[in-house]
Image 1 (cartoon, rainbow, N blue to C red):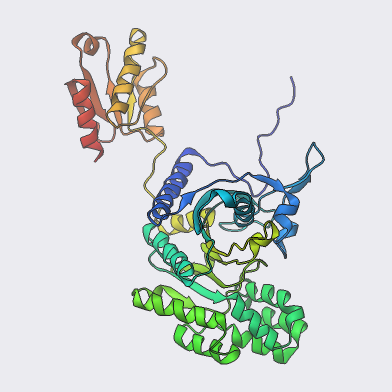
Image 2: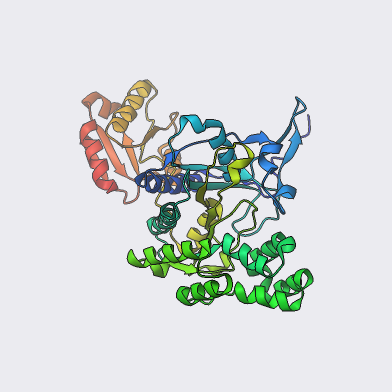
Length: 435
């Protein structure tokens, strides 16, 4: 006898059992409804891209984390590590076919060979939403409002979006004479929440010297009061700086809309990827601050320039579904979802096989989910199966019921039975019991 292969999967990858996958699909459905209310269209892109497409503008640690290989045709390819870079390629390829500005949302998996931690895996699901083809403040504001709406829809009203601006940060670094070190400074600040202020100060001092490191830390300090923070930024880079003026406009609009308390101006938000050029943002849960950002993004006005000479400024955000689901589980906010049908048609007589499937079709036509137990077994076995799958109702039809043209319905939760029903009556009773 040959040796069995162990049914294992690589670290950082997971199987999803039916109940968890049902919750994930319910979550994606809820998010999709929000996006479509805002006028966003769904798209999809390939899992596999040419490596030069993906790595042309990733930068930093991302290049080291990409699953990259040579395929059987000798082509240098890689699995996508996010949904933003493939979207830039998508826009360049289909720009003649799409209206501008173009609003899209995209739910799909991505892959990164990074260290696993709570809510973070090597294979993960993301949901992205973007507006491309305009650099207007309206698009920035819309994305911020959409982020707030998605959190509200999921019951996460106790969340805050921390907003920074890459352009303002870059101008501050330029005024310090640190342009050559700008990328490393930016990535160091981006890690500040993970490594702490002391380690951040040490790394910055090595890059810029102690005095300039102190100024960078002071500039990126989060005070909690957006008005004071905005004034401080204005003092550092000038009130006419385009980034400062954009932030002023956005926070004024948020105040007018009565939701400014959900947004915090936080200069420490820089985002580590090279392609961001304007506002950047991360979303934190007030009841679970240690889980990190569950929705992040920013403006990327030059990303598509790798693939087209046409200007395609854009702004968007990404929701990490795995991290969000982990947070929702801890907070008891899992969306109502079940992988089980509402009714199990019991199999009591071999001669009634066709009729059992007819019952199931009738229940489905009435708007109920139903399945047929596949073979005649003891009732105890069939009830145990229903209990294990959390099926709440059972349709009963043995030879006597079949001869009378009737069925029975049993509530497996209360053990109460309803006998001598027509199929239509059984369907109506089932809907009543499931309310």
